[in-house]
Image (cartoon, rainbow, N blue to C red; front, side, top):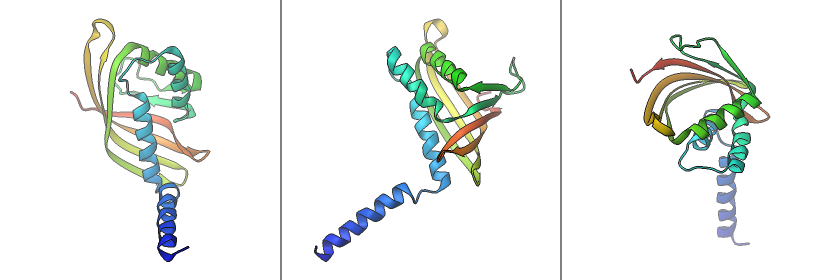
Length: 166
């Protein structure tokens, strides 16, 4: 093998190694959140089989028990706890109610401590609901508590910090 071919093999090996092993935990968390954002977006109607398959994939982004802490002024302001079944049911309900949903995440601040991480972020949602409810826009600041389970970062708790739309 010529030295130029060896050099190319080295370059490709280094590239693939850096893509799979050289990623920082912060980058892995951002990638994971971006994957979830893409799966939660709605830009076309899915059939029931596609929805069920997607709901099963969505569960993989959450801890076995996921907690949501809503804003204090929310009508049901107590801590909500969801297992895998409730996460899937909530996702299916959202997907059936909405015709379109675009999500964005910005201003991420990530603090990693071993297998635990805290992510402060700003997120917005633009969508339209079925029926007479029309379009909506939401813009919030929140915090995610994540844990690395089986090599993947999962969301264990979401805390609503501020409604930025008001």
